[in-house]
Image (cartoon, rainbow, N blue to C red):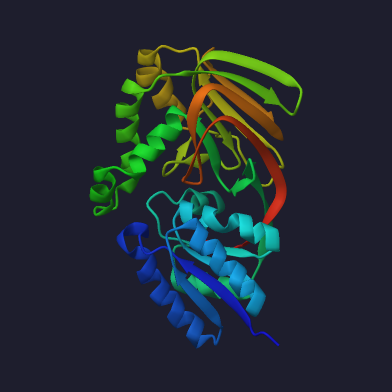
Length: 305
């Protein structure tokens, strides 16, 4: 009979090697508790998914442990949901929006203790054309900002001082100066059709924040079976840069004809050109996106602070 064990996925790039350091501490605790596990060091979704699927064929997996940032966690939620495998997340990235949304502990000893206790909760997932994620699906200028921040030289520099979250505001200023808004039509729950000729961003939130705590969907909850949508449109570049975007990122609802808030269980975005959408750090390029809310699609092990 296959032995009961955990699959552990560690992103060696997270937090300038912090993921590996945390794993070593987790490993010590697991050995003391005599808990079996198999480990993969990976920073790619494809390798992580293949690792889990192979173990499903040979071992009795009790769950998946992720040690890394939001992108690492997002890379395995699809396979975890498909196989109904519980997931435990030990944050080791620079943003850690998933950990913030669920108040997850950063302490390896506390993490393993609660992993063993295995108290779980069901959470919703976003589904973007079959690709699943935990936090926010964002298209437009916010996605471009996130992509620029994640690949910037200053993010690694800021990480050295524990200030990785500042990479997003820095990237925002640069991107807002050069980004060209797009024309968009939006179908909500298969019925309502809306159009904006000048769209700056659209964000569908299962949780409230991205980019290291920037709350673009302040009312979003990961267990209410609905996604919250924020759209910035019909604003001048100067107004967006100096008035709307700073207020939007503070996390408060903005009363403005240029900001729209909606809720939906499903929506389809059609843009007049290919745009970038980011889901849990994963880039997707297309002119059309169908985003659905999959209720209670993931079992999360509550390793809380």
